[in-house]
Length: 259
Ligand code: NAD
Image (cartoon, rainbow, N blue to C red; front, side, top):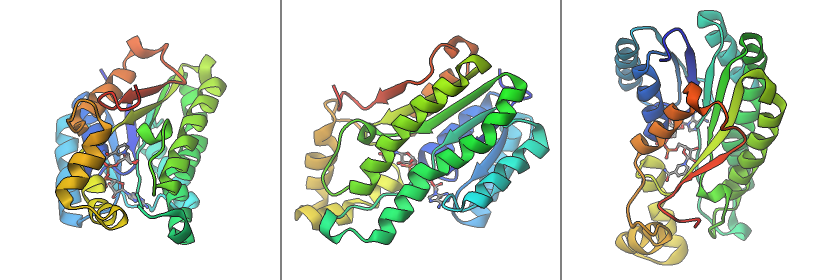
């Protein structure tokens, strides 16, 4: 149902972003991929997505902390296919550390990549969506857009910011056939979660198993990690015409964490 449409997913070389890219390409959308990683592995993903979509897939390596480069990537997608009709703000990083030791440069990087990049993508893409009278904007927020955990000051601040940005842009675009929503997963087993285990072990003086069971899954009543595919399936639904009335929402998928 997305044949002829185009989608840009930031941070789509790994984890949740890659799952989004796979379902959108599977539904027929042209894909603009973004994110870091091994060049050969990314080229394999790009080729796989182009084939799955029956259309085209491009890769743009822009660093999502660079506003000028972000605008250029949106312009590149527009030049290739019009649109982009669908954008998913997903690139993100984490740093786990108590506030008094939190490096200011990590704060700046997390705010830039996890929050400001979504502003820059939306700012560049909304005029194209308005011109076509249709658009879907989705941001991967987090349970941390609704509640906090210790030692994640920058991440929690950025994700709460995404929740507010989502509501605001939803109101501004509501009469243009554009919906703007956030998806707030609990813990999803991806490199982002795996990589924070050593710092959490250090910050809380715990073993790896204790971090997984007592910190990560402790938060989730289901005692199960959310999967990237579950998150992507919700995003795909938001792209359907049946989802036209869902806008300004922050949709939890967190195994009951924030209940
Ligand atoms: P991941 O590490 O697997 O993927 C992150 C992606 O962002 C990668 O493609 C990476 O290359 C890209 N990226 C990082 N910095 C970038 C930069 N400066 N410029 C361009 N790309 C950059 O992690 P993930 O868990 O799939 O995270 C994706 C999103 O989901 C993030 O916004 C994260 O905060 C959010 N999230 C994750 C979880 C979880 O438990 N994994 C839970 C809630 C929300």
